[in-house]
Amino acid sequence: MTAQRGSFIISLDFELWWGVRDSKTQDTYGTNVKNVKNVIPALLNLFKKYNIRATFATVGFLFLREKEDFLRMLPAKVPNYTNSRLSPYHDHFTFLAEPFDTDEYYYGASLLDTIRRHPEQEIASHTFSHYYCLEDGQTLEDFQEDLQMAQSVAQSDGLILTSLVFPRNQFNDAYLSVCTALGFTCVRGNEKSWIYQVKNSDHTNYPRKILKLLDSYVNLSGHNCYSISDVTRAVPVNLPASRFLRPYSKKLRFLEPLKITRIKNSMTHAAKNNLVFHLWWHPHNFGTNLKNNMASLEQLLQHYAFLKEKYHFCSETMSHITSRILNEN
Image (cartoon, rainbow, N blue to C red; front, side, top):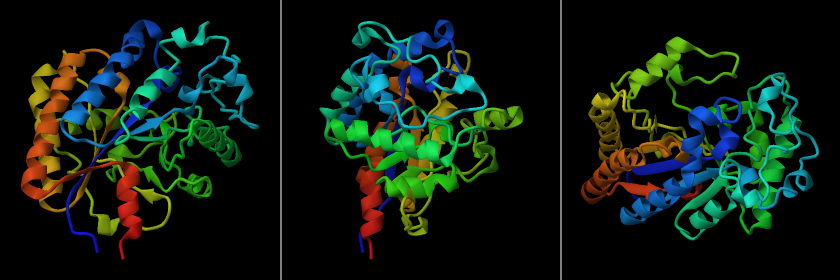
């Protein structure tokens, strides 16, 4: 039996414009995405400073290096979402820049190369096309084709993906068997509280959104930590999120100390009680106010270093902790 200790998981949803193309405009949010080229190196440097091992859940499109690859690597079936805006396939990728490696919105292969130069970090999947598992019109077969292509492009790059994060946190129990069949041993689930129950894009719940915002600053839903012993050993192992690291907001800057304290308290709770705390966000969340966001993150990582020294709190990728869970007697 592995010695008991608390675990600190960080997972990042690395998606560039593929993750927001149906929900944002480049006029209002383009700067966030274009600045991911600065965010990724800054994160990697800070992770190295504090010996953090993180999981970068990457949209499969970001593995592609040429515009022609998008049509060449097309899945046999693509999702036919009822809301056609959700699909990246309808425009036949005519929106991609030429040459493709100059496209700051959609090209991410060079950033992926940067992450891979840090072997302590994990490259995971965020599906091939930023696939929505709860939307009307798509099917289990569509999802299987998408996830198979995600594995194929990664394997062409010398990687085997074992961890998966569902885009928009659209966790779908019915799709887990496909994940297992395609080699995924773990997924990131959602917090247990009802305010984090995810439905499709047609079910926007504004009271719930307000509660989620408040929960970032005051403890409404609890610490959302959990014990390894309570994690079901069935593959794929579910490693639920504990907290979204909300980006710095100038309008809400007076609440920043509350946000940091909220997360620190949960980290401390996990470390003292040998529990898992799973923090997540998107690199593009840090694309504006980078200095402030990195300062906030460093406060959390300094606290991690303190907890590591005092309670043996341990930074782990999703795949690493899954191996520990599955190999325990």
